[in-house]
Image (cartoon, rainbow, N blue to C red):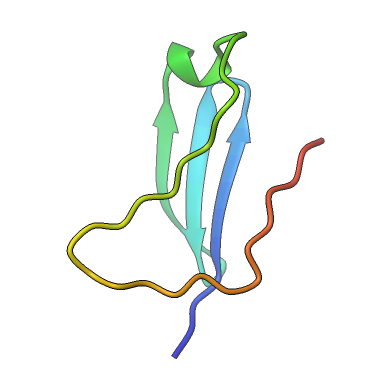
Length: 58
């Protein structure tokens, strides 16, 4: 069974959705830092399959 995961970042806010339902909202000055260049998706202690993975910019 698969799920749709969406992580939306805008300015200093990150929102996390699964299957269209908002799970979390975080706000931090660090999210809007001028020099951020990398995105990491990490899972630990479990094998995960990522299918149809996309990163979109505005």
